[in-house]
Length: 100
Image: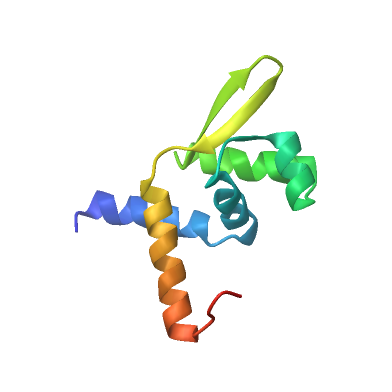
């Protein structure tokens, strides 16, 4: 692997090493959401959701689109889903978790 690619991959894995960010990414798997919707669904503080979305946006894992007065967040592309799906399959295989 190229040094630059390894460095960027390290950053992505650090970002994915956070339960709140993983939970937000899992939620965004199905559709786009506003900050207030994410706050309500995940029962998190608005400031915490905004912070985590900023980190995900800066890492180019999510994008934002302004619609009227609200901003909707969505996954940047399907590659993150493939990565998350494979990681979940690995965890299930190694720890035999089934559908917990």
